[in-house]
Length: 71
Image (cartoon, helix red, strand yellow):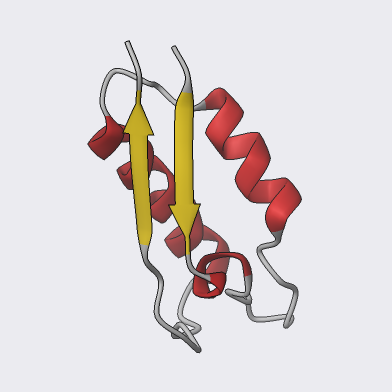
């Protein structure tokens, strides 16, 4: 059940309408709670949270993520 998650800083640097950063702690919380049935489901979960967090604020940078799960 090990998981490796690689991501660009555009993920954690995403900001909301109040200019708060998404941050590493928020990402860690989401990753720990994520459904690990597939790498794709983890990525989709993170990006759903990102979009919900940021609302209408466009990403300031690229957002790239790769997840590997060992069964």
